[in-house]
Length: 320
Image: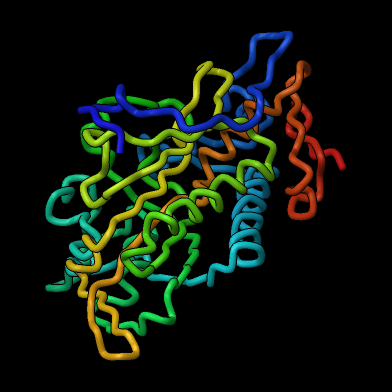
């Protein structure tokens, strides 16, 4: 991995697509969405407080279209098995993937009587732990899973960053990818997973770049991580939309995910995870990169079969 103590030392690997240029000052996704009536931050705040969002009408349709498109892409082209998982998990499950005990302040905890449960911050947690305390036949690997879930994060320590709009919320939804592999193949499998996440943005026609994280910017359980950053015209910069990480045997050791070859040799599996993709941040990038001078937004062609419309007019009217 690149040497360095912070994100300032991350290394750009490649760029894909050209950031759109506009003959007008581009609006951010909040102004675009509110003008079209597809966001409802006020009522979401009334229901749950700050850092929650709501969508309505074509906005909700767009969210559902992105979910369906991502899952169809990953299960149909990339050979992931779609899994439905619980959104509440126990302490052992959170510990297996490294969220506990280190990041307890970032989690939402609940419980009934003497039963302690945590709302998942990502589907990585239940997907990886599907095989906790199991011995997997080495020749059957890799296992590849995809799941769409809500994700819950307290965002402790965010200190007010990205509080406008849908970039950093307490609840958001995401399609997550998890691969359980043989350890000697984990780095090659990471390149495969990265390509699967990139395909989502390529199919949507969104400009993005890939960066390799420096050592000091790595997550707690990762041995190597790529971030995919999508272009946001309103900020005139690339912003993270996906992280794809090779966790080596760290999570497998914690969760006791073991392997066994045909000749009886035992070992630990390796695990990988990546976003493929978060729905909110993708929607924000889609609105901003595809906005027109009249305030309308063009819908990527690959989403039209799922939305039924090609464009959203400035007032939020779908146009077929």
